[in-house]
Structures are given as structure tokens and as C-alpha cells.
Length: 267
Figure 1: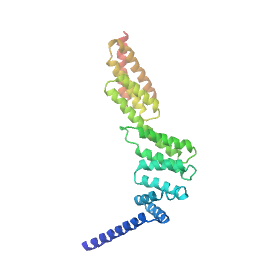
Figure 2: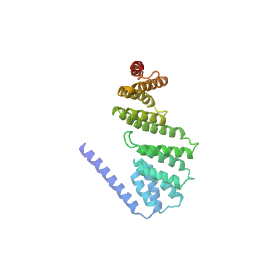
Figure 3: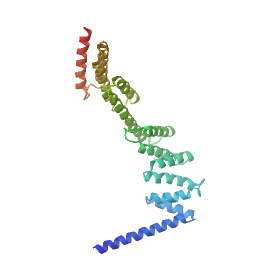
Figure 4: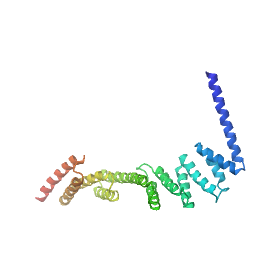
């Protein structure tokens, strides 16, 4: 059994060495036609690393030809399939720009946006790339308004915008927990304005009321009546939009306390 395993391992090593030797000969070869066919074969076998090595060598030789166009197309996918979305996006975007009339121009521009989407970090980090991805999907939709990828692009845009909304609401909650209630209200209101269709709008509406309520409790006596009234108004808006919210019970308690304060202060 051990001997069979050793023989199998020996055969595998020999095959790998032979394959490496063949590839090195291709790299050193001056036969560009042979290199091109080999690069395509590597690509079809999903050996993107070796395919890319050959495609990179052929870029200059076939520039301005139909093969040059295909090489640029394959280069982009080689980077993409290896998880290098930065270079993949660059090559896809360059292809769409250099070959606007190509049958693959639409796909390349879409894949450029996909690369940006893949580079978008988790919500807690800087979201510059996320905004760039949204912009690229929008550019794609503007250029190809009748594309079959329209729903797919809108889905990606919605997902990315939801990430931005989450970053904003978490930043707004930070103001709340730091007891910066006025800043919290402004921040929550801006989040609702910027992302009115977000699933986080309900949370933001609740926190607006809660911020006004806390602001009133911590205010000097002369300011409390006005600020409890603002908390009550925020409650009215909240329950009008979300009558069955899981926050309703807590909101009702704050409303009742706010009304008690209002009555006392009015006397």
C-alpha cells in the first residue's frame, strides 16, 4: 500500500515537472501564435496564472488586432478569477473604454462595477469604494438602459446603499450614547433623508424620539416644556408610520412620561 502511494506521488511529481517544463518553453518561445493558443487553453482549463503570464507577453505583439482585443478581455478575467479585483476592475474598465463597440463592452463595464462591489469593505470602515461601486453601476445603467442586467444592478445598488445607511445610523447612535442629543437628532434625520427606503429608517425614527426625550430630561427647567413637546411630536410621527413597531411599547412609555412633564410644566 505504501509502495503504491509512493509510485502515485512520483507520477504526480513527474507530470508537474513536465508541465512546468512545457510552460517555461512557451514563455521563452518566439512563436506568438503558439503562445496565444496555449494561453486560451490554459484559460479554458481555469489555469489563470499561467494564462495571464502568456497574455501579458502577447499584449504588444497583437496590439491593434482582433486578437489584441481578446487578449485584453482575457487579461481582465484572469485577474478577476484570481481574486485581484483591483487590477481586474482596471482591465475591465480599460477594455470598455478602448473597445466601446465590442460585443463584450457591456459585459466589461458591468464586471468593472462588480469588481468595485467586491472591494467594498464592511460597513464600519471607510466607504469611499462603496460609493464608487454605486456610481459605476449607475454609469452602466445610464449607458445601457435596456440591459438585461438592470434588475441585478439595482439589487447591488440597494445592497450597497443599505451598507451606507447602516454606517450612518451607527454613527448617529454614537452621538446618542455620548449624550450629544441635538447632534444625534440631526444625524438621524439626515440618514432618513439620504436613505428613505432603508430598513434602518424605523430605528432612526425611534431614536429621534428617544433623543428628544433624553434631551428634554437633561435640559434646564426653562427649556423642558418646549423639548418635551418636541419629543411628543416625534412620538406622533413615529407611531403614524410604524404603529406595530417592536419599539412601540418603549415609545409609549416615553410618551406618557413626556405628557406628564408637559402637564406639570404648563401649570
